[in-house]
Amino acid sequence: MQRKSTALHFRVLAMIIIYLMLKFIGGSLGNLALYPVTLFVTFLHEFGHALGGILTGAGIEGMRINPDGSGYTVTRGGSPGIILMGGYLGSAVLGNLLLYIGAHKRSLTQMTLNGLSIAMAFAGIVWFESIESTTILFLFAGALFFVANRTNWDQDVLMFLGIAAVFYILQDFNVGPKSDLVMYQQVVGIFPTTVWMYIWLGIAAMLSYSNLKEIFKGRF
Image 1 (tube, one colour):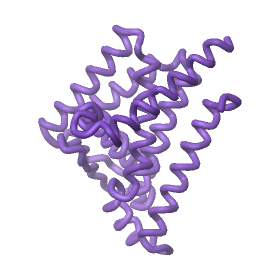
Image 2 (cartoon, rainbow, N blue to C red):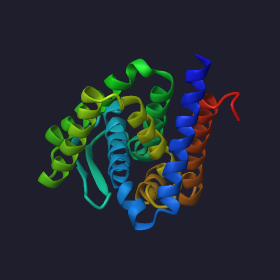
Image 3 (cartoon, one colour):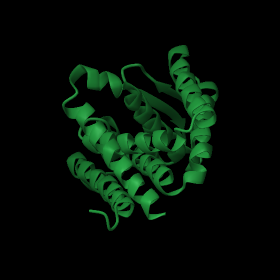
Image 4 (cartoon, rainbow, N blue to C red):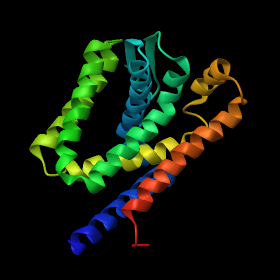
């Protein structure tokens, strides 16, 4: 049991190092290798908006994922503040949840990847916005379904997606949620946009730190 735990820690550490190397010194090849991660994080961001809408009684009228990594979700009704917050903080929660399941709940990794696959296919059909977006979602859903049901890579893929999503979200805080932050400040007020930006970043960073600390507890 101890040996398996140690091996898991080193696998997670290796994934973190691989992601950081691809991101910061990989150049154009690194960006190309991480392109699926960019699309995946965009999906988590938009799905976070959708979940915020569903939790506050909004209707979800559409979701679009663009090839350049941008996207949007169209909602009707609900709580604008929670829907807007759901993009950045929702994706941070979902990314950390994937990492946690991958590291601590081996028996749930296949089910989780299948659940992600179904969620992407559902979004592509029910929240249809364009053929291009639905094709992206279907291709990603098919890839995750294949990994979950035809390979033994489900744990590693889930952990890497979680790690990559978490680091991407933290690194992208000054760019990714910019439009959401502007609208959030207009809806909620209280603080300037920059202050809300650091509040959101602080919440995401604390959540990620607690998750990684739990994984590496007693190791480093």
